[in-house]
Length: 150
Image (cartoon, rainbow, N blue to C red; front, side, top):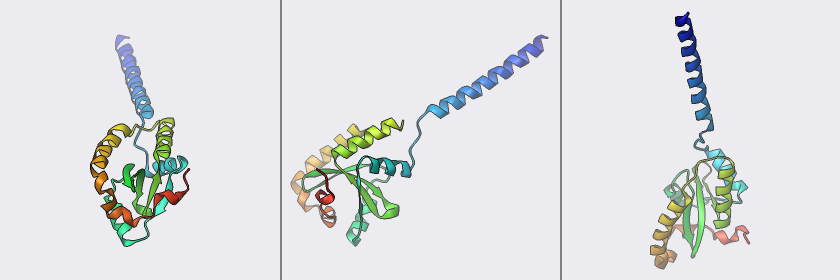
């Protein structure tokens, strides 16, 4: 009788362990797909700008894939996300970026550590402010101000 009881306890313990493992994996947020990120960017108000010149197409792969990057164009910070498959970038302002971060949180997606990334890039941008107008590759894109933000 005791061996049957021990066997039953072992089986129950094994089943409970498997259920706990499944529940833990199901509740942990995963890395969002590119389609999810792009959908959130559009929902947050980012605009799509298609690379239409050779210079734009050459500059596009230099952006870090799968992440929003802060770039400065004519003294204004823009948040850009490359879409290499469509030869375009999603472009937003600080307002759209904050909306994107809120949508990520609402969808239980992992934090993108925006402050660490922003401050690192901000320091680099501050150092480059004096030479901002001479950075050639952003000259090849149209002024993002024309995208219709308030």
